[in-house]
Image (spheres, rainbow, N blue to C red):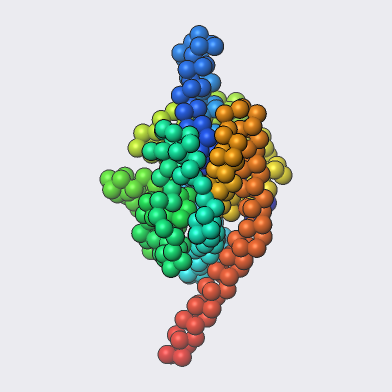
Length: 385
C-alpha cells in the first residue's frame, strides 16, 4: 500500500517546501509578490499575461494552500486502514494514538524554540526593526513577543497547540494548523465509527459538509472530502467515475494549469484553497505522468521529512535567518540568496535529524501508548465478564 501512495508522499514534500518558501518570503522580501506583478506588467506589456505568469510564481509561496493540501491528504491516508483492514480495531487504535502522534514532535519543536528564546538566540525582532516596515508590524515582528517559561512551553506544546491556540503566545507559529489537524482527523474517524458502510453514508457526508460550511469550518470540509475519497476509492469498483472523469491527460494538464493560476491569486475565505487543493490532489492521483513525477526520489524524500520540516523551519528562520540578516544587512541580491540557501539547507538538515530521532520515535511511541491503553481496556472488559 505504501508504494501506491508515494505520489502523495511526494506532494506532501512539495507542499512543505511551499510553507517554508512562504515564511522565507515573509522574513526577507514580503513585498515580492506585488513587486513581481508590477515588473511583469512592465516587461510583458500585457495585464493578462503578467497575471498568469505571476500566479505560477506566487503559488510557490502560498502556505495556506499547502496546508489545505496537507489536510485533505491526511484524511485520505488515515482513512484507508478503515476500509482495507478490520475497521473497528484500526479505528480504536487510530483514535487513541492520534493526539500522541502529533503531540510528541510538536512538543519537541516547542521545546527547541523555548531553548533558543531562553538563550537569546531568536533575533527576529532586531531583524524586523532593521528591515523596517512592513516587517515590524507584519509576520516577522509578531513572533516571540513574550518572556520564555519552561512550564508555559510545556503547556503550549501539549495543550494550547491543540485545544487553545494563541498566536501571540505560541512558541511556533506553524502550530496554528494542529488544532484543525487533530479535530479533523478525529471527526472523520468518529464519522466512520458511527455510520461505517451504511448505504446512506454519502448523504451523511453531504450533510456534514453543508453543516461545516454554515459554521464557517472550511478546514473541516477538507477532511470530509479526503475521507469521502478514501471511502470511494476503497469500496467502489476499479472503473469508478473519477477515473473516467480524469481519463484524458491533456485535459488534466490544462486543469492543473488552471489550478495553479487561480491558486496564485488572493483566496476567498479559504474556499478557493479548499476547492483547488482537492482538485490538485485528484488531478495528480488520476494522471499517470503526474503520479510518476511526484513519486520520484527527491519529492518522496522531502515527503518523508515534511512534518519535521514544517515544525522546525520557523525557529530556524528566526534564529539563523535573522542573525544572517542582521550580520550582513542583506541588501545585496547575491548575499541574500546565500543567506536564504543557508536557512533552507539548515531547515532540511534539522528536519532529517528530527525525523530520525524524534518524529519516527513519535510514531513508534504513540503506537505503543495506544496498544497499552487498548490492552488495559480489553483487560478490564474481560475481567468484568
